[in-house]
Length: 344
Ligand code: NAD
Image (cartoon, rainbow, N blue to C red; front, side, top):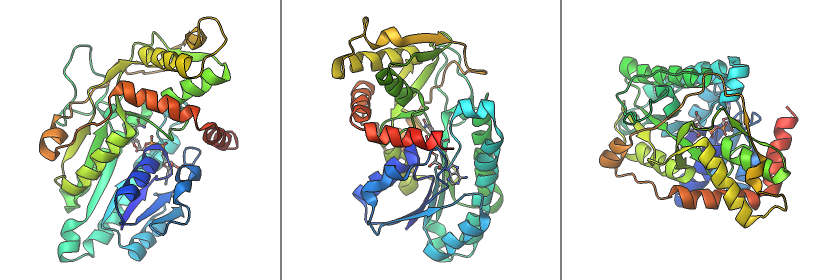
């Protein structure tokens, strides 16, 4: 059994579904079900005894300790987080609560549990922190991609909270010997992403006939990775990663935001034509730039490729087409996700 936290969110739900499609090993899934957590992401697992869902907070030390004592997971994979940069800029406190204090309490509970294990169970135990490339800060144009040894220079409250968490994870290993692993991943895209994030936001806004807001000049470069490739990487790091090590995950697929938005419009023009003159691109509008907006993120994934043999399976173009098609075919899911946010 493994413990996944935040498994009703975008990446966590994809991970749970992918894991149980490949393995009989059960998952206990601890999720607070914030606006971003959605049980509908996991409805295909209803009645599946391999998936045990617990609604709760990673910062609830008593609950986490009870889960660890009851289910005795061999690993904890922490996906739970407040994850949206715009929300962090408007109101950062919940980001500190979950991403920093929550991770600290989860680590403490993990350490107490691990300390009580013996022999093979103890040496095989892992704590895997799912982190982001945003901790490295903004990469200058033309500079080589960030490696695992680059220093952390987070520029927004979300990235700062994730950086703090990564430091706590590292410290748990250096101070107490807790066998931790960290992945720092590029921007993910794919099914089940909450429609406040760039791709689903643009797809849903385009279909609703709303403006497609581009921050600033739209030339901010992001490194895009299909969520299923990220899930593959996490499984490999869990199985083969060296405790105490961090692994960058990215597919060397840098695109600027404006290019991504234009590509989405072109795909929608083809798959779901609009009668408006100029197609969906006519809905693009430039708005004031995000505060502290990083110009470029890019990670060098050669370590996970050479040491663990990971490779991305999705090209950006085919992954984007598949993603646009998924949202077109899941209007009911979009309604549920949007109504969850509206009711909070
Ligand atoms: P998400 O916002 O879609 O999902 C987060 C999940 O965590 C939700 O189900 C939410 O209910 C749950 N959650 C929030 N606070 C919680 C708490 N205190 N206790 C328990 N559960 C809680 O986020 P995501 O995009 O799936 O990201 C998952 C992880 O991957 C995050 O740690 C994020 O920093 C990291 N990450 C995301 C990306 C990306 O592009 N989305 C890229 C790299 C890393």
